[in-house]
Image (spheres, rainbow, N blue to C red):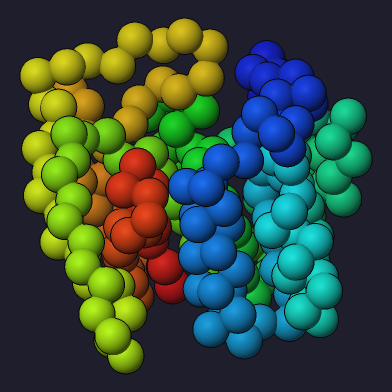
Length: 207
């Protein structure tokens, strides 16, 4: 197992402090995209507060968890960069890895994608997406809310590591095009979208 320092204390996931409206919306998309794939088995890498895992379990899916921090009581304990070895040949219909891979240096990102390819039929991934946003929303009767979003990536700004994120899409050289090239070395992209309610998270459904 690779040596890695745990970046956050379990108290970081306290409901009142951690779960705002935008994060709830991201949880909704994680759950909805998983349900659409009709899996039997789901592996969640990076437990966090485990709200998504509990909801998916309530929906009748076989949910397993993987995390480096044994204090979060995962089903499997290990570093994500070693996930293929730690799972010893196990494979899951859907692997959820959301707001997690940015906690690794980017030079480990592609190799980790390669290992996720070995353990999941589908992979649902979200990554931090940093830009200056202007959103216009209109609520129409019988049509729901329609939104137009305009954004500018902060390519001129480099992300400084403060103990959690090593990189984010839209800052410095980490463009969406660069991330897409890395992903397509190992996966086809079934779907890519920004969470309308949370433009800080970009989702990829991979197979």
